[in-house]
Length: 383
Image 1: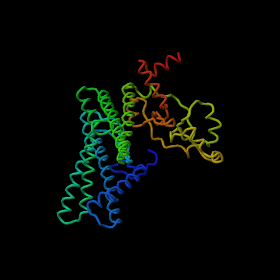
Image 2: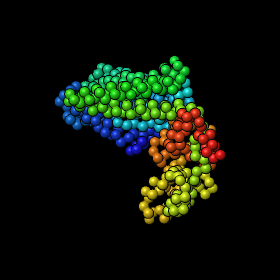
Image 3: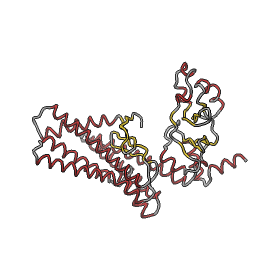
Image 4: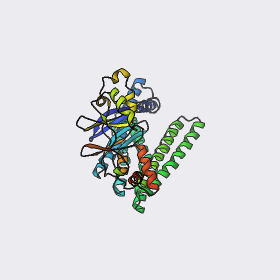
């Protein structure tokens, strides 16, 4: 996620926030300070409203983080890794490294988040009652009640049976359990998600037409749900087509590598022009892969710096790797190939064996639909 602000590691998982979270905190603080608190406790200094509003906004996004961490904890208990957690304008996302192994695991991982939000809502309501009972003041009581209400709404909204919401995962698990087909569960969840996205967009348009500012939020949520459901459907189709196809049947074998000790200028002049490749694994002098780079990234370097800068000094870390026998569909779950410079480096015994790009995945999917494998096609073309 571009513009990601690291927030440390919680439960061993990197947690970050998109810059839009700052905007969301400001909007929540403004709503609480300008509307909620003055209505409940009029006549207080404006600065007091804003201090409480900021505290409430930060607490609300902390509850969103707790929602995502709950998914992480339960996922790990069922053998599913979590790559990272990202918070952004409309909530948070836990990026799993693999798919849940069973419908039961899928269900439990999915409901963990809404259950946590519901628990936070109950806890905040209890705090509000306690604060009121001991005479803690209207402002503190109102702040706690607002957190209870919003977390309750968050729990209910997330249980709507439509991808990418948690309720969509529950629907997927239910259909998977009922039919024995994960693919059918994914189709049901993404179809429901697209329908729900259009419904939110329609509601947003209606609210905007009537002059309600809340319509903008409905439009944003509708656009997000629609886009995310479409992306999940696309990934589901790819996974279904690939089946258990191993990485070795889709990779480009024996790719050209970039010697890390070469200068950028030397590589661009001597190696890059003679190979039909845009992304390169970078290797050390003894052949050990140390990173990845691309022609686009190397040419972004100013010409004078290319003469003295080594390729290894400007390459990206080697994070997207796979073994040749891993199912390609599982690899794509943890390593999305979203940009032309994205690549999976295939390793065997610590050495570069091949590369997989988005183009290679598309080719593998097309061949799978035609009833052929990539390796069979390659063998035929070389005969």
